[in-house]
Amino acid sequence: MIVSDLLKDQDGIRHGFFTRRGGASEGVYRSLNCGFGSSDAAEKVQENRERVAAKLGTERGKLLTVRQVHSSRAIVADAVWLPGEQPEGDALVTTARGLAIGALTADCTPILFCDAEAGVVGAAHAGWRGAKGGVIDAVLGTMEELGARRDRILAAIGPTISQLAYEVGEEFRDAFLADGVGNDAFFSRLGGSGKPHFDLPGYCRQRLVSAGVEKVEDLGLCTYENESLFYSYRRSVHRSEQDYGRQISAIVLM
Image 1 (tube, rainbow, N blue to C red):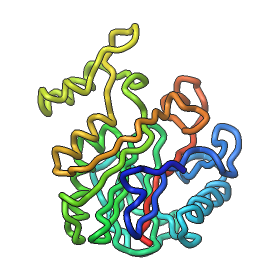
Image 2: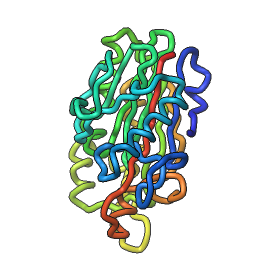
Image 3: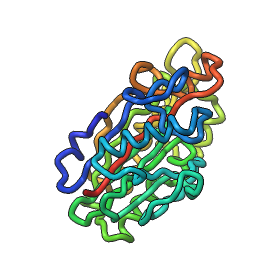
């Protein structure tokens, strides 16, 4: 797993941005696919998630994710739920010790949050819809409700698609500009097509800073470009593959 310099020395907290390596899955899912939403064998996914839980130092079955729907909903997790019973949403927040919470991604942006002093952690799946719709603000607000302070919250942005690899249409750009002309800063016309490319991690970072998070780290790792390390939805589409795996980013209070 990859760790954030910003989060790694926080007392009582363990975290990891896991790669696709070190798992039991095969084929296009090789090897640490943690997404039950894929068509991978459920027993392989479960085994992979148990390996992640062990690496984080928590108990078997205490790694939680939600059914991600590209929303702005943040859910408070205070007890274990079964894989088929997970609620819909795109972020988790907890104060429960030993309960690991995670976000599944394959190009979207995973963000891990913590206020170690308050004992509150969060994990968000921020695709463009969720980021634009306010999932970051929802996590911060939920953390504050549980005792965190915004000026103490740390946030780390994990592996996600880079701007160079994220070509979008004009209508996509127009939708962001409708929220504010300042969003033009997150678009450039790279490559030979002349089409706009969107800086998703840059946009997420700006949303965090604008919301009052003073310390943010972006690991700067591209899921599309680093095939040996990460799954990528867009890469699978470009190759006409039937499906793709999901890597997990998770955090736990110990």
